[in-house]
Length: 61
Length: 253
Image (tube, rainbow over all chains, first blue to last red; front, side):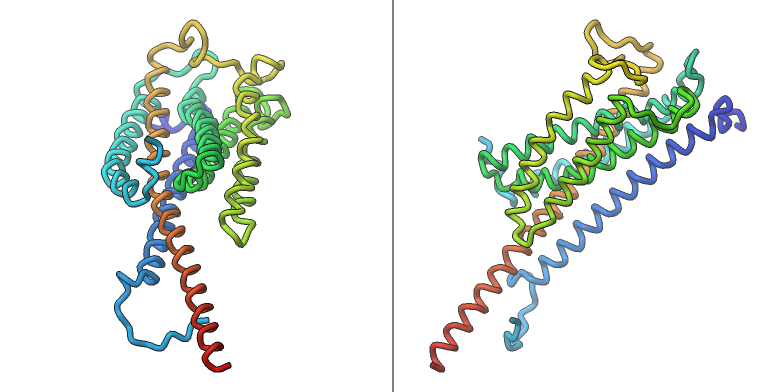
């Protein structure tokens, strides 16, 4: 087990390489999902078909 | 034919079908690829265990070039045929490609230090990949630099197409110049020069990266479609408010 993590003495290079790949790929996926969600919420709030009909005066400028 | 898939609604329906498959493929290929890459493959007789960095470095570098090619193709499609989803596909690809390029550079550096004795050299391959990274960043910056989204799309599409000249330069840099980077050993005339025990994890990881790209691309494109609709609705609201103002002014005056 220790030999596996040691990677023949190169563990200090192999594992950081795998760690940064995992970090960046999970991070990009998470950010992309968040982007999809926020944009979908924004659209639902604007879309007259999905927006709950509110009889408020239209005072947006 | 090309306009059959131009309809965002049809695209979202298609994405609904593909997305779970892309996710499943990503996990499947990552699990098998990591198993072969970390456990079931031998150390290299020269590189030792650092050869395992190749199983992430090479797929990342392939995807860096693949994403740029896809982005440039989408930009060309957008400029020539005005395909409404092409701009969004290019915009969605750019950050993914930038991430792959960054990973290729960093993992290459982590391999270079023990094997070459240096983190970085200004040789043709490394420098041209660094330029690729800046091209991605430049594309994204220019894309967002205009208040009018359409103008940003157009300006950045031209940048992406001009920058495409860098892709063959990267590919052939190891043949054209004397570089520290080794020449191609998989995609070359006469077949791959790698033993099957090492080719297996490499191909599996390459497929994992490709499936991941497809998965994240679909997620980002749906986000971009939403954002496009939000822009259109906001624009209509402003126009309606303008019209209402004019009507009111007409009545008063």
